[in-house]
Image (cartoon, rainbow, N blue to C red; front, side, top):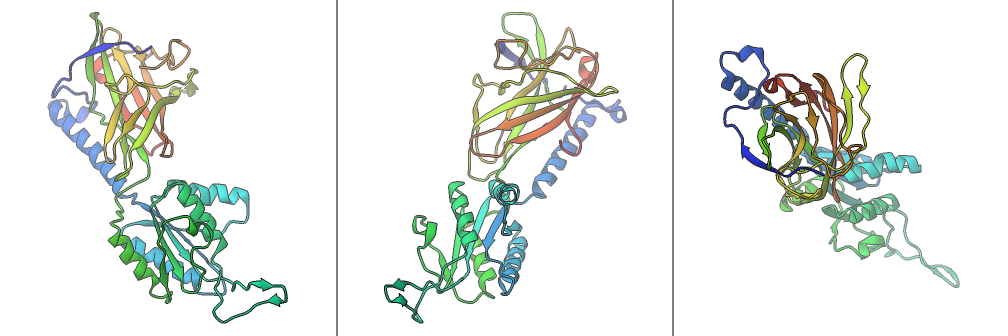
Length: 363
């Protein structure tokens, strides 16, 4: 079980840095290293705008694909990352493309183009009338059903002549907008996106962040033992949705000597910083830190983990030798895709020379 501990101090200005270029000015070295990490993280977030799933028909003998591409272009101009759904004919295609894209997307645009006329039958045969309605796109309605299950923000548009309140639209309060001119539709959609205050700065995901200059020195409660804790923060990129019941795991530990050697251990929940339960909520556009690992002041190469386990077989990869290690962490929650990140631990016999940084290039 994780130990009770008392936070005594977080040394202001005495954060760690490993850089030979600033030996004469330790504080300046820390400032440059932290500023670099912050800028890199901000640039990464800015380069990944909110995704919009565009669900609409794409008949090859019509202008539907051209209209879909113009919708995509208008949304891109607003700063979004649009995805045009392609009709899939296999289960593997559905799972790998449509299902995955819907799980990752932030917004959903439903465009219901006209299909065949719905001709009712009577006992004497077919009954035709110039006022007959048309059915909509079967694939688009299926994607709409999945989007409603995922509770995605929705904009719905139906071409004039399509049977209203058909399919799942009958049960959704989508208030589909009727359109007649396909050439004007991209602008109509862009105007509605702005009216609904959809933002390209939201993301349906969690990311792991690490300030390479951070650590906190802690005295274990009731003892003279001091430990140094290293945090990793989990940031919720969504602008209004809370990430609920988030759990953190150490998935893998690798000793980066030659040859690389994976360290065996049983995976178990890690502890959130300053919190005594394994599951935590993360509010929109905020970050919450967890205890990534700790080292001992008296034994700087001895690495430990704050875990929810009463067995040394779980959550305790044996790490007691100086060198470089790759640690892979994951975060799961009720309502966001799983988030993963790999970090490089440079473990030194000199306490202040140990560093923990995000692996370059991601996982």
